[in-house]
Amino acid sequence: MSFPAGGARPGAEGRTVRVAGRETFVREAGSGPAVVLLHGSGPGTTGAAWEPAMAALAPGFRVIAPDFAGFGRSSPLPRSRSGGEHPYGRRAWTAQILGLLDELALDRCAVVGNSMGGAIALSVAHARPRTVTRLVGIGTLGLDMPLPPGLDRLWAYRPGRSAARGLLELLHVDAAFRTDEAVEARLAATLEPGPREAFAAMFPPPRERWVRDLALTADELAQIRTPTLLVHGVDDRVVPLESSTLRLLRLLPDVRAHLFGACGHASPAERPAELHRLLTTFLEEP
Image 1 (cartoon, helix red, strand yellow):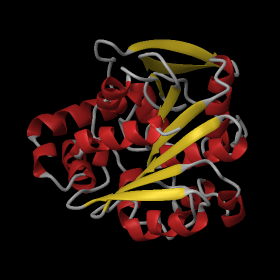
Image 2: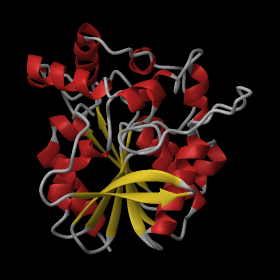
Image 3: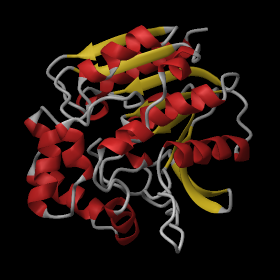
């Protein structure tokens, strides 16, 4: 998504929750059945990317949008002094979200994930089938595929004005999202010291391994019987439609899909009103 990191809008309050001894920053709004919104892995991205969706869903749902570890205001994960195992990835972020559900005493919730967040949403649904009531993946990762060139560019990002402009061109089909103001906002978000340092070490080459790390196996996907909605922009250059949603339609037991034409990876930004109607209708189904 292309929204910059930052504070919550009116109606979306933020607080820190201790999860396994580390801080997870969480934005919350509304009341009713719980919906957890998981952001993607774009540099500078945080749970603030979901603020328009939070405003749209808050009248009927309790909406919760955390920052993943290493992003925004959540604590980064330390690497062992000896180098050791890479601290980030599917296991760590899934454990963070499962721990957050426990801390918030959520024994029933829907989970919506964008891009990398979609992979973690799938992973959470696999780990807690009785907890996750509905599942939504938007331009989602979560299955093994060749490293898309666009995702390689996104994970290789290093802060700079030209790089920030290139990132927005990669994410968005609509030029209205690639203004000078948007470039400056994206650049500012990627210059935040803590997240900048964490992101620089998060997806080192060879980056194919991080796609594999975030992937569930075909057997794991077949075990996810949660009703699932997949949303994808047909011009997505970060996670191509053919590598993701079209394959997941044959692997998930209870799945349906909605495609946006003339839309890239950031459909929550480019098609917000349509997406919010889709989410509300799907999440309200008995």
